[in-house]
Length: 287
Image: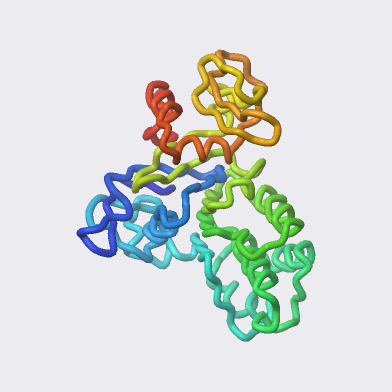
């Protein structure tokens, strides 16, 4: 669906936000794009949807350069930016005026999403709180049924119950013909939702792997504070003791701790990153 090869991008040629980045994204998956604030997550998404243009390399959607913004591409793509600006219309009016640009837009599903998210359908969006506005646009995004759905920091502005509802609705909206990409720096917001994790760090994708494969190769657990943990790839203190990542050696059964994994890959300790490189989990597109 999305194919990126050797992409270099910067708003100035002297300062690159993305460097020699290659990535393959396919339908039927929910990708979680994780990165620190300022890591370039939004920049990468804008390249995918044709709102930013590579300095070199390629970024294609279904075999066509994203920057061409072909009508056939745009009608099968929906991008929800981090900072939303809503028109002075109700959600119902938004569906009537804008849903027509998406051939598979489902008005009935849109209103069901609004109901589940507790967003009034007949109130002007500009009269709603920022969180309500965000939920209305999330509902619209899901109802477009586009093959490529790109959500940039969608949980910003949502309260805890709304975040849980968001995860439920996104999981239910995934189909074999849909590719969903969700960017966030709030790692726990994607817990139990994504099936493939991408970590963007220092201008490159440093991890691109399915949750199942990570669970098979790594063991996430705890150990007493100060205790030596043989083969520890990463350890961090917590109220429960040390949180530890180590090789699983076929044990399986441990749940992937996204926050711990993210901290291990973006911190100064490169032990885990080196181990994953040796396993050839890093830098390799999921084919």
